[in-house]
Length: 286
Image 1 (tube, rainbow, N blue to C red):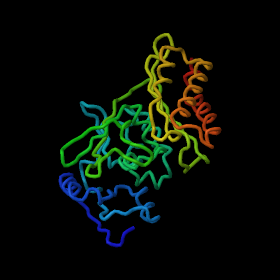
Image 2 (image 1 turned 45 degrees about the vertical axis):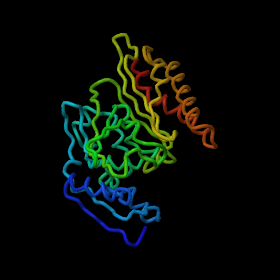
Image 3 (image 1 turned 90 degrees about the vertical axis):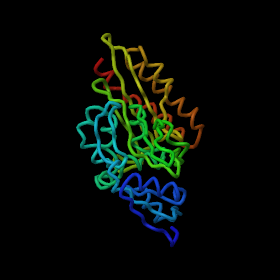
Image 4 (image 1 turned 60 degrees about the vertical axis):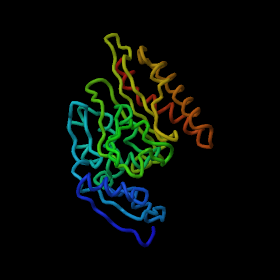
């Protein structure tokens, strides 16, 4: 951490954008600080300015609008987990927030920070992707929108520009149907996910899958929808043999995307097993 760092605290979005338009490349936004403070202590943060964005009203709030479910980038994980709107319209995101870190972390970490950090293991990214969320950014050129699926350029490399700030996320509502988020780590709690998955699905009157979005996280450089798995399952009744084949396909795509590494022996089996757990309630209720 450089010794001449300055702390700034804008009171409005307009003031924030104005500051970033001049000092963006030298600035690190501070919201919850759960990632930034670690970087500061480890010496990885070389910012000239630390910009506290917690006072900006446009970054707060969770509301249903004509565009969909709007979640402010400054909303904490605990606020999202307590939101009845999120529970009803974005059940996968709601479920991911229930197991996010510790209660202390959930009380301070923000969804905007979780996305901006571009970590492959970020818990909220797969749920946002299956809800086809769009990130709304504010910058010197005005508003810009990008799908959350395209928000990361690679591990810990964000496509959010240095002069931009995430203001909110707009999610496609999903009521009813089947929804789930699961992850596995080296221990049961307070662990960084090694494999995570999110799914939204619906079935027709005959029991076949009529709609599905599936996203894989943590075990690929960036979280991504595995459309080959979606295409395979679409129109099929989720019997055990069908789901098992879907898990094998998900594992093959993971290896294709990430390449073979020393951890692949573990992760290949982990993806297959977690996929079975993810969709087992659909098999069980068939």
